[in-house]
Every structure is written in C-alpha cells, then in structure tokens.
Image: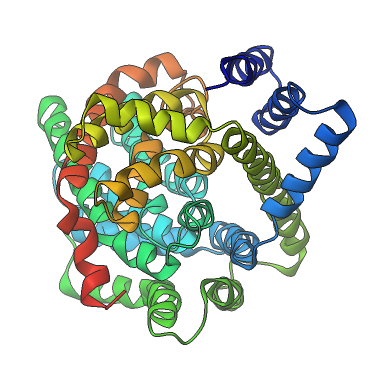
Length: 431
C-alpha cells in the first residue's frame, strides 16, 4: 500500500472540502495532487483530464439530463398537485393524515421524477401551508418531508441507479429499476409507522372523509401522471426501448401532459431548460471528477488493499456488509451521493461479489444507505432544501429527524439481511 499517496489523497480532499471548495473540484484537485507523487505535473494533468472525459463517455449517462428535465417539467406542470390530492383521498381522513399524505405523495412523485430535491420542494411547498393551518409541528412536518423524499431515489426511474450501473461496470439498469420497488415501498411504510407514533403523541387532527365518487374522480385526474411509470418501466423491462430512450420519452410525455393540464406555459420553458442544464452540469462534473479519483485509487491499488483488510477481519458476508454499511453511513455524512457511488462501488462491489452477494442487491443497499446521508448535516442537500421550504432552522428539524433516521437505518438493516426483498421482482421478470 502506498501510504504517501493515500495520505495525500485523503488529506488534500478533507482540507479542500474544509475551506469550502466545491465537492467536484475537491475530487479533481486531490486526484491530481495524488498522481503527482509518481508522475510529472503535465502528464498528471493530462491524465486526469483524459480520465474525466473517458468517465463521461457512456451512452447510459444520456438518460440523466433527460430525466432531470422531465423532473423539472413535472415540478412546474401540476403533476405534484394531482398526486397529493390522490394521496389525500386515501389517507387524508386519518388522524395526522397529512403526514401519511406527505410520505405517499413523495413516493409517487419521486418515482415519477426520480429526484429527491424535486420531491422535497414540490411536496413540502404544497403541504407545508396546509400543515401550518391545521396545527402540525413545523419540525415534524419537515422531518417527514425530508426523509420521505429520498424514497424516489430507490423507486425507479432513478438517476443514481444509472450512475451505479456505470460504476459497477454494467449491472442491468432494468434489473436495478425493478429491484428498487419493494425496498422503496418498505422504507415508505416504515416512515409512516414512525409518523404514526408522533401523530398519537401530538394528537393531530383528522381530515375530511373522502366519498367514493371523490376518490374515483381524483384517481382519474392523477391517472395520466401514474401512467408514466408503466410507460417508462414497462418499456424498459419489455425490451421496447433502453433506459436512455425511456428518459427521452418521459420528457415528451410529461411536456404534453403539463400542457394538457394547462399549468405549464411556453414562456416557462426557457427557465426550465436553464435549471435542468445547471443541474445536469453539476451532476456531470461530479461524475467526471469522481471517475478520475476512482482511476487514481485503482492505480494505487487502494481497492485491493481495502478488500484485503476487510476480508482479514471476517469472511462472514453479514459481518462484511455491516462493516461496509457503517463506512458508507459515515461517508454519506460528508460526501454527496453521486461521487460516493462512483468512488466506493469499485472498492466494495468486488469484495461482496466474491462472498456471493448479487450486484443488484448491493446497489440497492448502497443507494439506500447514502440516502440517509442526504438528510444529515453538514452536506445533506435534501435537509437544507427541506428546512428552507418549511421556513425553519436546521436546529429545529434535527430533533424530530432522529427517530426517522433510526427508522431508515432499521429499514437498511432489513434490506441488507433480506436479499429476497430486493431480488424477488427482478427474478420474477427474468432480469
């Protein structure tokens, strides 16, 4: 193990992050400094640039900008409103029903948009005012909104599952998409059970009872939005089109649907395209610099050294998975999800595959694990968005968040130790 290289890589990254350098630049600069230990300055810079370009040279990555654009269109096009109304029709009449509505709507919207940030903004912006009017504690509403929004990263279509497919060397995107359904729903149910405890504690009010006629009406209003799930996932699983082609179809479908609803105007299109371009640029730069760091780590034999160290502790697969989960939970506190997936997948995936873990199962474990990091300071982007939407400070949100963190960790343990929950649907579809 080249300890000097590892020391430079780790310390330079920590220092750069500590002084406020953006994550993507920190990854690229620390990779460059590490490579300079064994290679001259100009070849080092050339190699890093080359690896960044090579890292983006993947047809599967074309799906990301299209899904990002589809998510932005959904956010503006009235789709979130219809999904929330549908969720309210089912659970709004229960005591504290708006918390259940938040979880269900976040699962539905996240599943369609594939973005936790879009879900926490759209759902929180609509339900937050209603919760305030009915006397819900602000911190509790924010905690439910923040944690439930991450379910859309597990339930397909999900950009981060595409990134994992790239980092793993080509695990089937269709299999990953199908595998995410049951774990995503399971986490949603756990969050609803946790919310139920707070509902009883605070004696929260019930909503109005929905008649069968109103329920039917709201279902048919939301049905065109829900059809996107069947079109995208059904088309991919059925072999009608690839994930990249499905993302383009999602843009066309959501654009047409938003104009049909009459809530999207032509004058809003430029701002949507600009926002989507900004998000895509950030994601792609993260991917490029993360791929360069992965290559530097590989050239220094760091993954092999970590593998040997972990396997020297135990050869029991459950012990190894618990250790990896603990490492990823720590990493997720300080690192964004995309670079974490790109850097640590090549390190940990060969270890668990050697012990017989399915790469699809491990992908869901990794994504679910890192979802928890999105809700934790100091880097948790979903946490910051959630408290901003709720209009409260982070300090007021952290205390009610803790039980939901614990619930998500318990869910992670179940998903880790129960492979059938993840792999049953892919096997059913022959993926």
